[in-house]
Length: 407
Ligand SMILES: Cc1ncc(COP(=O)(O)O)c(C=O)c1O
Image (cartoon, rainbow, N blue to C red; front, side, top):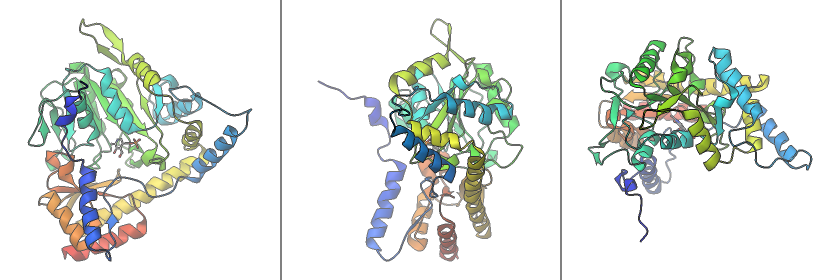
């Protein structure tokens, strides 16, 4: 008799965005004359930068000619992209990352989700609350947790991000083996200072732990004092893996390209205490289970680093940050405290009441969709996430509607 992986049955039955879609669908069906504006799901709205489109077209032309056609490429990514990443995203910021430490993939979601399989099943995992749900759910699927009790899985060490700590979790007293960190943060939009990241690197070194540093929103950092990479912190090469994505940097959510950095110096240990390079394990996993990102998409990603591309992606992030500023200002005028939105495309609003209540209020009175904070974890209760990914027109209209709904 074929049996299932019963860890899947521990997952909370409904997925946050499915819940939202259901409520919005029911509202829209009952009120067909009232158009809804979605500031909920974190998908981009603006088209690909022109430099990326040009690169896609010319790579498609190459694929149409026998002399320049390409079949399978290297699973880890073409050298032209890995070299650009190592130079522009790391060497130019003073981080020593080699091109062969960069693994190109079709998304940071897959990488954040898959990385846990190179670690033992009985390690202690520390995960922020609130959090991008992928980190939690993939560890549940892998059997590293017990059941969910009051919205929290047994066995996970939760790192609380609250107004009291500026939404940046403090280093815990207890040891953990694998620590997920995300800055700029989804959902809170918080960024970590250099001093805070130094504490995390010291914690990992002390506990022989690994930090999984998700910097999918790195392109939104504008404060020059905020580190863009964990490798800007001394000693991080020995303890950290970093995830980046072109999704929010260059509008690649539908085009799909990302990368993961695994330094060769990074070790983890077997039961007998022998060290193993995680680079070798991830290389093995990646080459066994993944067959590379398509050539035209890697060419489009490489165009992000060209002269025209750099300006275009900067302008794209600036555009969304302009939306974020409008949202922050509007929330302040309504007397609602908020975090994020300055170095991140998300605004985390303290609404002072249950987050699903506020979600329903905005939907019914303003026809605006936000994301209830409770969906990101227990500490998200009392908050909503507003996304800056939308057209200026929609953001302005949504803010006007919210203002009159709450008046
Ligand atoms: C924190 C974080 N990491 C990773 C991802 C996924 O990125 P990708 O589109 O590269 O899979 C997202 C997407 O919303 C995210 O918010």
